[in-house]
Length: 292
Image 1 (cartoon, rainbow, N blue to C red):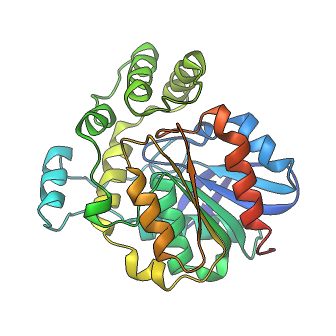
Image 2: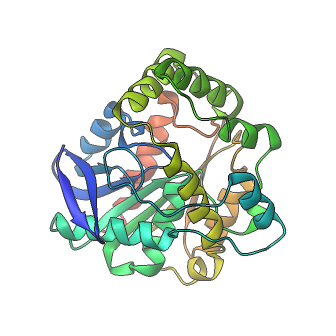
C-alpha cells in the first residue's frame, strides 16, 4: 500500500474505487483493515473513491514515542475532571487526515468516522471545515463526560490486557464483541477472529492504544464546535451499544444544526454485515446533500 507524508508523519493508506472522495477514519487502536474490504467496495459502488488509512500510532503509519500516562490513572483523572497529559490530541489526528487529503490532491471529501474515528471526523469538520463536504459520525460521542461513560463490563472488555500472540488477539477480539458487539444482528465470529489475527500479524503495537486513549481524554468537549457546524451531517448509532451509549449519538445529532439521526436497532459497538445496507444508504444519502 502507498504512504503519504502529512503533518510531519507518514500515513499508510489505500484507495478503493473511483468517484467523489470519501475518507473512512477508524477507532482507537484499530487498523485500516477494520474497515471491511466488502464494506469499502459497497460504498465505492455508490460512486465514491473510498480512502481508508492507518491513523498515527497504529498499523503501518508512523509510531510516536511520547509516553502516555497509565490507563487507570488517566481514566480516574478524567472522571473527576482533572487535566490529562497527552503526547497529542484529536486535533493532531484531524490534521493528519486533512494533510492526507491534501497529499492525495483532494480539496475536500466526504468524511466518515467510527467510534474514536467519529471524534476525529467531528474535530476535522470543526477545525478544518473547508476539507469536509459531509460528515457521518458512527457510534461516537460529542466529548462531554456525561455522554462518554460506558457500561462497566464494556469498558473492561475494551481495556483487556494486550495479547502476545495472534491466537490471543483472536480470543480477546471474540470476548470484546461478545460484550460490546451486536446482539440483535447476525455476527460472523470466524471473521472477527480472522481479522484480529491478521491485525496482530500486520502490526501489533499496544503503546499506540494508550496514546489514542490519552488523545481522546485530553481533547475534551466538542459541543460548542458542533453547535456551530454547518455541514450535511448524519449520526448513526446502535440501539444496543454498551461502550458508547445511544444517548451519545442522540446528543451529537441534537447539537449539529440539521443533522439526521439513524438508530440501528440491534446494533452494538461494531459494524455487522446485516447493518451495512442501512449504514451505506445513510452515508450516500447524506453525501448527496453536498457534492465535492
